Image (cartoon, rainbow over all chains, first blue to last red; front, side, top):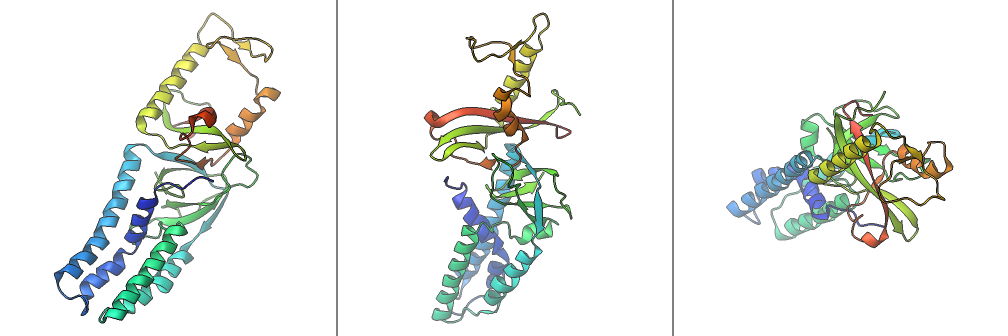
Length: 181
Length: 118
């Protein structure tokens, strides 16, 4: 079994997916950590990982890090976005960061979520992709393909439907997430 | 639709590794310079194979050959069964560490696609 690449970049992409939360915290502030440092810290977490994600896309384009993936079975996973929004983001939006225990328990919960998103390769969940009009499809490869990978992967595409057997040229964002050329 | 050798759009570099659980085929992401080198190798090999004057000789496992020979293998030959499977494979896995142990490499291959996606 090989180790998946882009460990750090994937974590930064997960952090980037939390950008709306950091922006909200920057606007709301915290009575526990008042002052500019908290706001600047939140703004930093909201922007730097997203800039690194954009940099990764740029590098993939420059190096022509492009693969042709063939659709066997495609699932449109809009429900993942709902899970992302309602199960993860909304509880954080509503939590106040006004006393020490609340502040640190929220940070701890955020760490658990970040780890899970990273571990489950859910770094494609990003409001930036939604704003740019990308749809998220999980592709299951053909199990009859003798030498091909059996692991599913994610393609971000502006197409609404993916048909079986359709080849898609896509840049590699990580070993499991691709964005159509 | 035939392949347009003058309009190669994408190159994927792959290897076959002698893994603990048997042969493993995977794509190793490569940078632009490697892709260009593979493209040059492909074009040069093709030019050599298409050179006028001498006919290609069918490969025979019982013959002894030099390091550079102009040989061919029919697609329906038993000897090319593995090549056919490799050709028909879609979605090879990706292994960024595929070249970490060169002594485990069995072979390498490249997938070329033209502007029409052939």
